[in-house]
Length: 80
Image (cartoon, rainbow, N blue to C red; front, side, top):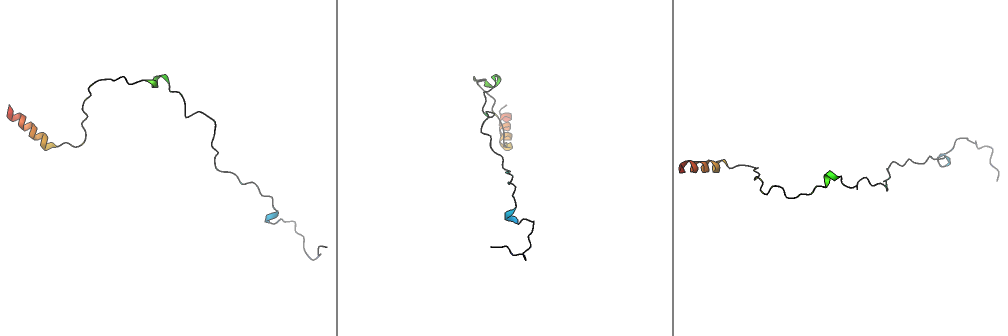
């Protein structure tokens, strides 16, 4: 088959003929090697709890019933 002379030959390439650049991979790859998260504790952090004081102070927190405290104080005052 002979190519007709009427048809113009263009030097421009159409989309399928163009060389496409590879798409940049934006997701980071996970590192498989490395021991950063798992390491031996330092000597100062290897302390063991040996008991400490036997009795600790009672921790008071939260709301206080003022009326009850007032009545207790009144009873103590009346006893004297």
